[in-house]
Image (cartoon, rainbow, N blue to C red; front, side, top):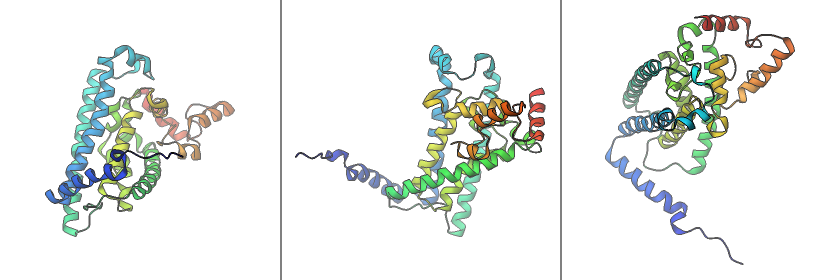
Length: 289
């Protein structure tokens, strides 16, 4: 009986050895603080701006393909001036985020306790998988509740209303937000879970890269990847459904679209029923402006 053998160049050792050597060389060449700061910035540049550039160039490069896959019609799409304003706000938010990260790293060097593990050894695969699953679930909880709190009528007009300017979102609008929202709803839900686990910095970068690609994709306005953007697109259009990312807590709290539709049909109510009359008033006020 013949058995299947993995080619030498496909073996785990052959794959991880070069990575391990490169990582060890990086650790020898730079301080942990420099590695954390520069690496996190590079991940942000590649996995946020890269997908944004791809999604937002489709209109110009492949207009027919773009039109075929757009979730919302052309009249609802943002104007050029709105895109430029979005770019300005996102750049400011990322400058704030980077400055805060630099400050936290500086404090950690004084206390001798970093937020992540930055050492010469690579994290084992089972640890990476464990930390990613935990971080994904905890990020969902942190994002869902912080996002829903920002929809409270007392907070929405002052903070979250900025993000909802794009009723037909584009990828860049993923970080088009008030600075408070950028910190509370965008940054902390991604950074807190790996910190609680004292994850390896490489694990954090993998998780961060995934979340950046995910958030630009769900804001892209396109029906790619099994309609990944559809739920969040509906959130931008209807306001009071789909507060989470993976849908578990929306199902649990009844804020997913199917349950809201069933409630409206049963009660004959408005699109906002099932959340609160006060929030419905906030939405009406937003749409009238």
